[in-house]
Length: 321
Image (cartoon, rainbow, N blue to C red):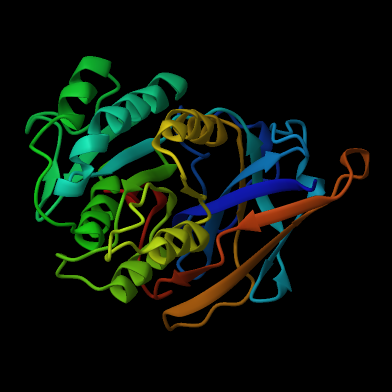
């Protein structure tokens, strides 16, 4: 069995003149070092999780073990780290009528995810059916408090149809309120979409423009005419997360525990793309890893991203606001 790495893009920022000793600089929780700013070069940071052939995680890889290609061109790695940094994470839960019988197991799995996550994570909940609703109280943006999250997950009845696309768009925007550089969504749904204003192509475009890694869990009813595993698989592929399709509902608890572990065992690798133009453009990423002592490594990663207009004036500290 091949070793596997999952990676996702989580940050766009302007950068240049990076310190040569950037690896050694201390960083606050949830952030990468404060980088020098230029108006013409953008930083792309990848969130990479490496698994061994038994499905465990492979710590100890170095910067030299990775090669990154952007639109076919080898890139110079500017920043490399392997540490359990906290993340901003959204639990995006299908609360349509067909989920009523599954809700107790889904809530238990979501709380299992929280228990297994970094205690400094900032977490929010989005419940969706015909409408998209933020689960937390109006005066609470994020929390790691288990009782508060439990109430948020139970907020509102399971009824109505499914607005998956609208829920994703809302959640991607809400992620920008978080202060952590790493951004993640965990999406649980048992069907496709039969109620959103947005189409799937628009949602995928927003994912390509975002810095979020998306994990998706499909718990479909075989008789559901709206079931659409393709969109959940595509969301994970584009963003660099992972898609789980569960044949039985009881698997959702260990899967959520596994996702939390993956998030906590990731490498941070950043580079400044060599080739840019002044237009918005789509970039294709390929990441290759090799470590002779570990055998053959297979890397799975975000397939592409849309680079914002290079004339846009951004500062790293403004990302996520």
